[in-house]
Length: 400
Image (tube, rainbow, N blue to C red; front, side):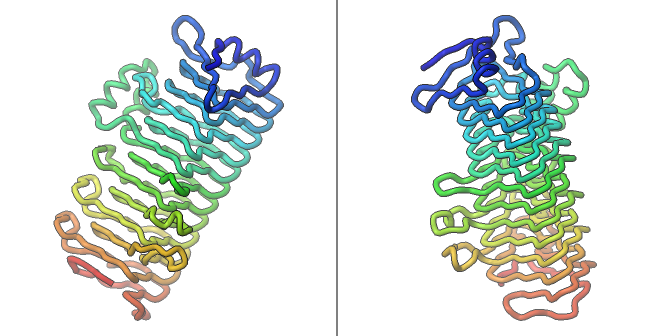
């Protein structure tokens, strides 16, 4: 392994704009002496592209407040003590592909601080691994965000642990935010995304999220969950697994298995509630998905919550598409609340909805009382036409 001090790293990066190790021979960068042992770039404004590959940083790294007039590529690097990108601006692409963050979480890095990040082109976090949540609140993105094939876990599990970590911060706002982020895997509240948001799996690697996905953002395009696995089991954040409450989503929201034969084994799975009480310009499509709120108290028996949502197209609950040989039907353990305004049809086909042993569901598997559905409602292949406000369906189990 190659080794250099942080001072040497900064000097070489300033001259060459590129530092590359390789997979078998990575570069190890030792932090400055003294306390805190934080690695901060001495140069604030970068006019050329910057590339950093296969580097292991032995101290926390702070790129906060940096200005990059072109792209910033930090790929296949390891940040065991975290990376800060708060209020950083990147005029080109920002790539963190293949990076590892906080494999041994420390008390002073309970989450990654990327608040206020601005990226004008694609922001890719594909193939990353993080053992702490990522805070992207109030950030701005001019193109897609990709979390493909990534594994992200919130390190904070309950309020007692959150309070202990919060007490390690001196600033009152940091204490407050640390307590709030208990159980959050990705926090995008107040963010603006001018394109789409992806959490897709790839052949050989499934995207897995443990903790809350807070997507209360303004998203111009679609949200894609392709073969994604999400779990809130063991967390007590007081939030659903996927939170889109009051979000503004211009496109569609898809919960699907993989799109090819090699990916079809990856099913979208969610242990925890999906909150879709948002404005959604396109459709909502659950294909071959599995959603369950069994033994998850925070869900109140509701697996999919669309109460008050404004949906610009159709809502589908159906098996995976035939052309990808998906063997999965849509399965839901918990209530589906469809008391929404839906501009087109609602279709249940090849589905199973059950509220067995889920007391908070009040014996209602599919709740549509007061819904405004402008199209047809399908159970199987026969539509029920002219139902602008479908009455409550009192069923313990619904197989279609």
